[in-house]
Amino acid sequence: MRAEELTSHTPPGARPTVLFVGDRTAYSDMYLRLVQSEFPQIRVACETGPGRARDRLGDDPDGACAIVMSAGLRTSDIRTLAALVCATPRIQPVLAYQTLPEVRHALDAVEDASLFERLSFLPLRTRIDSAMNILRLLFSGERHVSGEVLDMLIEDIGRGTDPAATPSAGIQRPLTVREAEVLALLSTGTPNKIIAHGLGLSESTVKLHIHHIIRKLGVSNRTEAAVAYLSGGGGHAAGAVQ
Image 1 (cartoon, rainbow, N blue to C red):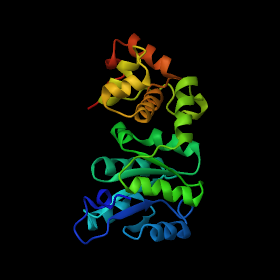
Image 2 (spheres, rainbow, N blue to C red; image 1 turned 120 degrees about the horizontal axis):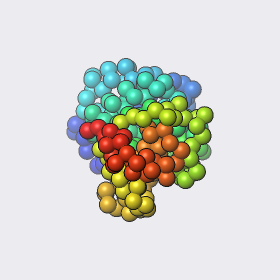
Image 3 (cartoon, helix red, strand yellow; image 1 turned 90 degrees about the vertical axis):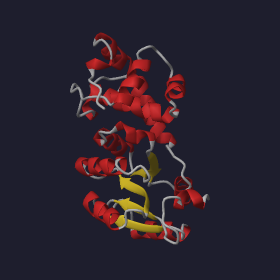
Image 4 (spheres, one colour; image 1 turned 45 degrees about the vertical axis):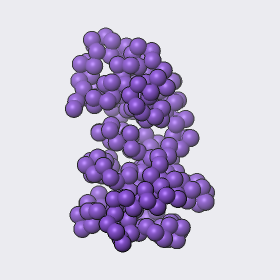
């Protein structure tokens, strides 16, 4: 493990804090104790909501290196945490989840798509040794997107999403500048790999952006998103925001 990555933003002599946000149904005391035992060089803390998390960060502004937020939190709580992370680039954001519907819920709640370029995923129902390996990767400064999350995004993008599971279907929401860039390339039939290379992103990040674009435009798949873009005369149809 590269301890220098974990402690690079932490004052000398202090242990960096990894803050888990969620209730005990998301993170049991045993789970948190195991994480602390496995990584003695960090301090493991847990708060139930974004308000307490913000207070903790305020008390120790240089100590937190990662926020692991439960995908089961309320929409408003996820948005608050996402905004907090986006305002603090040194903090690594991790979405912890039990089920894929929780992931969809959380991704729909995130309004700033720039978070997708930093977001990692932690499956909570995986074996504990696998979970520790994922955390070791995250704490070394790397990203992790689980295979089942990628499969979900590929299915949503390729086959379309279930309108009944899409609360925002039919309601257009403004795209971010990055989403507009992805959509412009998508509308020309550019493959994800080429989009990723052209924009300096990973393929998994491109898939996250496309997933969010589909939800925001209220369409069923990437083809319909491209048609909406072209019929609207370009990105102005969706209204890119800075």
